[in-house]
Every structure is written in structure tokens, then in C-alpha cells.
Image (cartoon, rainbow, N blue to C red):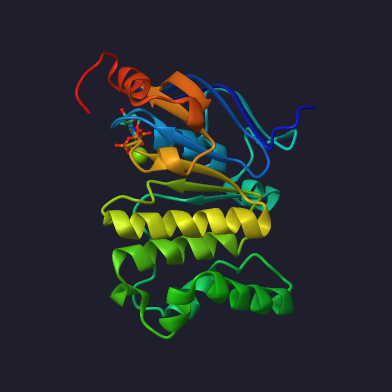
Length: 242
Ligand SMILES: Nc1ncnc2c1ncn2[C@@H]1O[C@H](COP(=O)(O)OP(=O)(O)OP(=O)(O)O)[C@@H](O)[C@H]1O
Ligand SMILES: [Mg+2]
């Protein structure tokens, strides 16, 4: 058995005639922050969906702490400790912040534990605490991103996957979202797998980076070792402009 929390090996996913992921392998160690970056249509979201059980891969292996996740249903994968925050900040606009958070706990029987954790969540996300009675539809984009992350954390994942958390947010707000994600890693020892289209901000927050293009891994390295030129080359397939 290896020391990885998540291991994805030679993953292939197709949508009918489209090969979206072609032999991708990656791993996430416990407590690690790993990012997958790549252009439009690279297969990033499909990879996360396959790990979470939302799409069924054609072949490959997906393991969490050594246990096989391939072919398991999304609820089983969630119970095993994987939580996915999909792209697009899916909130219940007319429900309050508190009510949206309660939805993150529907799988859990320990109500007292849940109440304590919601309290802890409000400490980690003070902005959500201030707005706890507000309809979620009235929150800003950054606050909504915090809300969907907070909701995912209440399912008590060991691995939290977030698809394009910075999409459409101002740089300052992006930094706040990342600060919160890193705080969750510090607080709970959460491992994070974060998809982004651009490496601009992720480089300073991630431990390791995978660059994918056309469903294939082009580059993997520790963020500290990566130079912008190498990323560009992997990302575009040539030394194009950023
Ligand atoms: N539900 C689907 N049905 C058919 N093809 C799909 C579906 N979802 C994605 N694809 C195709 O699979 C490929 C990979 O898409 P995917 O959404 O995983 O890429 P991505 O890297 O997340 O892109 P983006 O940065 O635009 O979000 C693309 O060619 C896309 O058009
Ligand atoms: Mg995507």
C-alpha cells in the first residue's frame, strides 16, 4: 500500500465519441494541496467528476487510502471521504446561508456534532457568520464560493476537490478564498485537489501542480520547482504568449 490518499492511475473517460480523459495518472498525499491546471476542454472537470463518481470511467484505477472507488456510486464515494465542489457555485438562492449549510449535513446522524461544526465553520468563515440569515442569492460571488466550500466541508471529507474556485472573482477575493482553503487544510488536515484554468494564483498556494491538455498530463512538479515558461509550454504545446 502506498502513502497516497488519492491515487488515480491510467484514467480514461469518454463521452460517446469524445475521449475527454486519456490515460491520466495523478496522486494526492494526505494534507497536500494539488492543482490541476489546463486550458478549456482539457478534461479537468471530467477528471474530478470521475473521482467523485459522477461519470463512469472507461478504464483506470481510482483509490482512496488504498480502497477502490472505481464503479462506486457518488454517495458511497462521498461517504468514503471525497467531496466535490463543482464549478458554478450551486447554492439554493432563496434559502439562508444557515439553511444552505444544513443541506451539507443531510448524510450525518450526529446532530450535536453537526451543530458544533456549523459553529466552527462560522469561526473559519466570519463573513458567512455575518450573513447567516441572508438569502444565499444575495451574497457576492466570493461569499457564494465560500458558502459552497463550507457546505462541502460539513460532509467531513478527507479530500476536498474544488473546480475553478476563482472563476469570475476579483484577485483580492480569490486570495481570500484560497486563504480559507489553506486554513481548512491547517485546521482539519484536509487534502485539496483544485482545478484552475490559469496558474497565475495557484502557483503560490499549491504544493504540486499537474498541467493537462487534451485529456493527457503534460507536466507535473512541485509548484516551487515550476517556471512559467515550462508551464506555458505544457499548457499551449508551444511557447506561446500567456
Ligand atoms: N457531458 C458531456 N458530454 C459530452 N462531452 C463532454 C461533456 N462534458 C465535457 N465534454 C467534453 O469533454 C472534454 C473535456 O471537458 P471538461 O469539461 O472535462 O474540460 P475542462 O478541462 O474542465 O474545461 P473547462 O476549462 O472549459 O472547464 C471537452 O472536449 C468537452 O467538450
Ligand atoms: Mg471544467
